[in-house]
Amino acid sequence: MTVKVTFVCLGNICRSPMADGVFQKLVNEAGLQEQILVDSAGTSSYHMGEQAHPGTRNELKKHGIVYNGRSRQINHADNNPHTYLIAMDESNLSDLIRAFGQREKTYRLLDFAAQTNEKNVPDPYYVGGFDYVYNLVADGCAGLLAFIRQEEGL
Image (cartoon, rainbow, N blue to C red; front, side, top):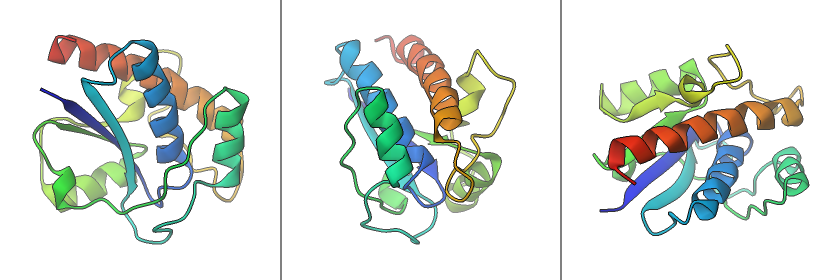
């Protein structure tokens, strides 16, 4: 069985693509690319079809990650029992619950972070701080991968 992980933020150009890229790198390094599919989406349609924000692409590039995804909006095909929906903040989590109801496998990314007490990944779209966001995302992604490996027996 293949597990899917979809990271979700508002516009799918800053935080969720960053998590997508970081998590994909971790999955590849663990040799799990056949068992875990990685994706990202936004709760809004503001940026559909656009590349990730230059700040996200630059920060990922600094860490050896090339990201070529395009923004898309979350849809009902994402509401699959084998899909982990990972929200970047409380607002995104609320949007997911509103769209799909209470479901298993819906979390905030920083629920899995070991190095911070933050609960929400801040949106760097207007204020920057892509390096800080990267550090939070990397911490959350490492914990998330360990959690999924345990849950799914991978």
